[in-house]
Amino acid sequence: MHDPMTVAFEIRRPWPTKKDKTYYPSLFTIWHVDPETDGSDDSCDWFGRSLTPKAKALVEEMAKWEVDWPYYFTAPSAVTNPKYPTLRSVGPGDCMGFVLSIFITAAWRLEHRELSGRDIRNAIRVSVMDGDNLQRTFVEPERPQDAFRFAISAYLRERRPWYKHPRWHLHHWRIQWHWGQTLHRWLFSRCAKCGRRFSWGYSPIGPWNSPKRRWWQGEFGVMHHECSNENRRPSQ
Image (cartoon, rainbow, N blue to C red; front, side):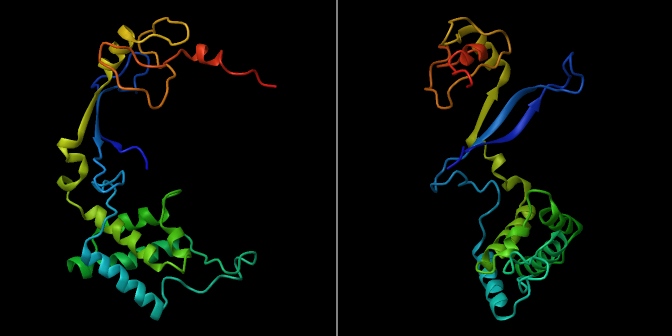
């Protein structure tokens, strides 16, 4: 389980700060709080991972095709990877070709349409983006369903209408007012170590899961950075 809260919108001040002319501080942050109705932290499907029954059937069908007529999972590259002869070598270009092929199949089978320029750009992004791409899914021959499921999910995620995105679930919104939080900390919170107040805009150190308190009560267990450092043992 992870944090069910995801930033839906960030409302920034229209004018920058005096010290940094390129920084526009946030006035409000609108969070989407997932209700976790299915036991996960993404029951609203923020990331578009869930598939329709028709798309699930296509995933299984393409996986069966791959078993009968291998195309996406080629033979191990013992020449390019002598240390790991069973590892399949899939580079960004290979991944992009595979994803484009899956996108073409998904577009026609699910929506009877050709790929648009936006679909092609999406295929390139999920194939070659550094640190977050689908290359790894094409080097596991035991689970061909994973590659097809991830690729088709990436295709459908960009096809989802904007108004169906969970960020527009108004009943799941939680609004964070930053200036009000700063005012509350300045008025009521005190350091748990020295008892002194915090200066305006100060970010203290505090526990992750502090108990919820009334608005006029200070935050629980927060401390100045220097007060927190007093509790640490000196390095040997």
